[in-house]
Image (cartoon, rainbow, N blue to C red; front, side, top):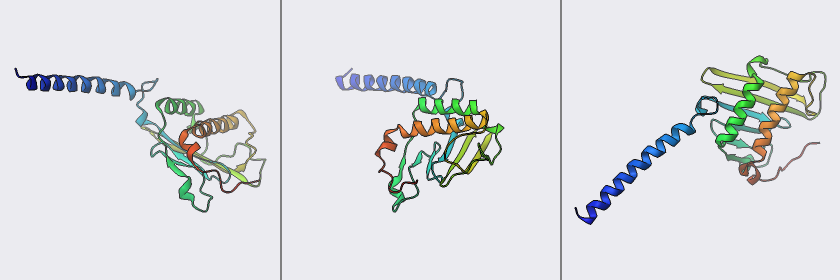
Amino acid sequence: MKKKDVIAVCALALCTVLCIVGASALSRDEETENGEAPEDFSFALTWNCYGVSSYDSATGKLVKTTDATHPEDYVTEYHLTEAEQQQIQKLMQELDLDSYPSRYDPNPDVKSEPSMTLILTARTAEGEKTVRAENIAILGDAKDAKGRKFLDVCRAIENILYATDAWQALPEYEFFYE
């Protein structure tokens, strides 16, 4: 066998091994702790004063604010890490979004100006559920444990997104609310 042929055979063998190892690692990465594939779950969250911030895990679109002279400057793409995706999926499972009405106010007796909007959507292979808490009190308090759980999950997701390099790289807010 010529030296050129030996190199070609070695390269082919190496490629085959790498493909097998890569496929095996990919199939392991696609499973979450409870055995579900991450692509079976996605979510979207709109939050902040008047609902100016948003994120959709299906597209990776992260919006810091829509209230700016040039709102396009406040948009980026961020795809969650596997650990972040699993953490949020666990939070959403514990929340049981299906147990909430589609329109919800965690503290209907309290109002504020400005107000806050939270719109939380969960998508799974079984379907989609959205809970809209629009124009609610910005104080972020709830009248009961169920309301606190909803607010806590939304805050936890926000905090995960705030901690990302993608969020940190966006410009500072142009307008602030009091």
